[in-house]
Length: 250
Image (cartoon, rainbow, N blue to C red):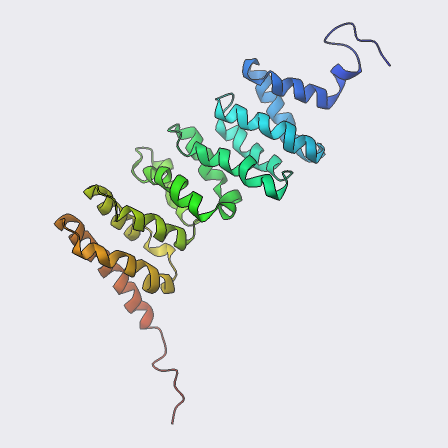
């Protein structure tokens, strides 16, 4: 075995995994060029790392870099999802999803775009309660963002979340003590009207809205009737395409 006379010589200093560990350990103090080189190495060689090394050595370091601003979310989020494939199913939510969910509270637009761009890869793995309680309250701010790209990405994200989740989230807003929050909930129902199956419109959406027609505030009542009118028209349009009767003809 070769002797090591210093940091730059010897077997261990030339071992790929050792170099990756060193790069990860010193990530926060490395130059931007060194960070970029390491992230590119991780991306290009992701499939060649041992699964345990990827899941329990690389993943925690990437999450740490993401949480503490060691690199741009646009570079880190795709890598977390890529290496997350090596994480055992029972650890996936805690190790991969929860760090991403926490980032929805981050006001940085670059972080929000990275989360939304990668949403197709993890949307189906999100628990309904997590979406309603943690993702949606932050996600909805994107509808009124001054940057058009954020607004567009937010609208696209809605289609990835099930109607059941949306109904739960918007229904909660209708119970908010703040008048304008209740109005916003009704407007959110209307803005996402094309995201619901017709059965959900009849069985979930309209029943969720009807209580708001008796809200103590006229502003809310008026918006509720507008929303119901919109969804009733959708039901009428669909009903017009249905057969007249399913009963056997005499």
